[in-house]
Length: 113
Image 1 (cartoon, one colour):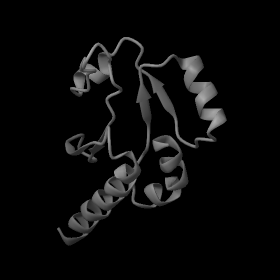
Image 2: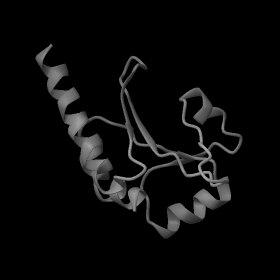
Image 3: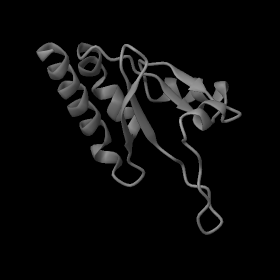
Image 4: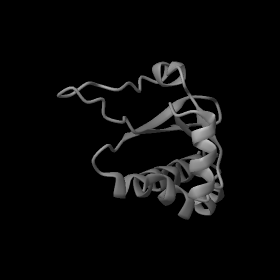
């Protein structure tokens, strides 16, 4: 659902000057199948060993014997600074809306400076 939401708003996200890349611990082959099945226009990176996720502090937390999927979106500015982080494990339907709103706010701030 989240990936398709990003797909549906991909052009808007690009128009805001953003680059969109998906990352998960799934394999490269799994990413390829998922990308094709959902017609995703953005690349997916396989973080099979979890190293990238660990660098960004995205880890699975065990709850009642289950490792839930941690979903996070990072907005990184042109200088490489993480300026916004979104965690929406439960509110997936508003995730992309919040990200687009933040991109617009950042663009407005940049043009004012």
